[in-house]
Each structure stands twice: as structure tokens, then as C-alpha cells.
Length: 157
Image 1: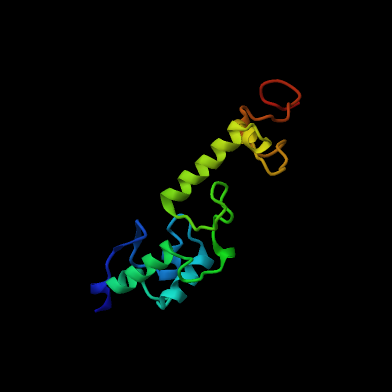
Image 2: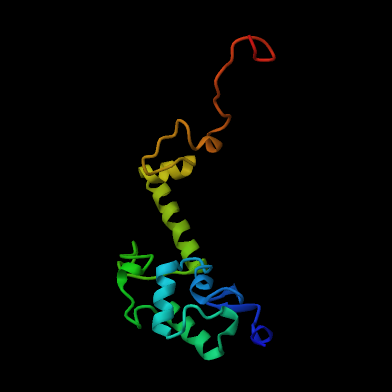
């Protein structure tokens, strides 16, 4: 009987979520929302985290949308935001979906323009946080380097 009422796709924060997932897991499918932030949003909106996304009513969906788009209004801790001390404005924000992607692209573009170390590594397609590159990241550099065998075509001596 409950299965008949489940909506298969629910739109929250401009993202389509599967109706058969629990709410806390379903919200993590939105780009920019992780497990911890999803948990806090559910608690503030006073919606059970185990409830299926497809069983939400319109009031709950509106409340979730409002909490996700205005986290400052609901006093969500700043350490949960994904954009603290923004480069341009200096304020703390939480970005989701296309805003997050656009901002990340601009950050990388800025780093490349000022020719910082991280920007140059981004441009070259190499890791920028100190990882070794001898054995990993081969796909970015070209042909793989292997061990040369002794002998002829078969490789046996």
C-alpha cells in the first residue's frame, strides 16, 4: 500500500533524487552535500532521516529546500560549509550543484592565470599536493614505462 504512494523522482534543490532511497542518503546525491551536511539539514527541517525520499510531502520538500539554500538562517555550524572565507567576498557560504562547479572552475582558472604552483600543476594534469608521480598518474603523462626483458620476441631466455 505504501509502495503505491512513493514518487519515483523527487526534485530537491534543482536535483532529481530517487524516491526509493532514504532521505539522508538521497540528499548526498546533490553535488555539494555530504553525509554530515545532509544529517544536519534533516535534523533542522525536522524530517526523519530514515524516511524514503518518495514519501516526502510538499511542506517537507519546501522546508528542506529552504534549509539547503539558506544555511546561515538556520544557524548551521560554519565548519560544515564547503566554501569558508570565499576568495572574492571573504564570507562563509555553502554552494551546491552548478554554483559549486562554476566557482571551482573559476578558482582553478585564477590559479593558472597567476601562474602559481598549483595552477601550473592543474594545467599539466599532474597532482598538486605532493604525491609521487613515478608509479602513479601514468595515464596523464603518456606511454607507460615498463621493465625491459632479456631475449627475443617470446621474452624467454
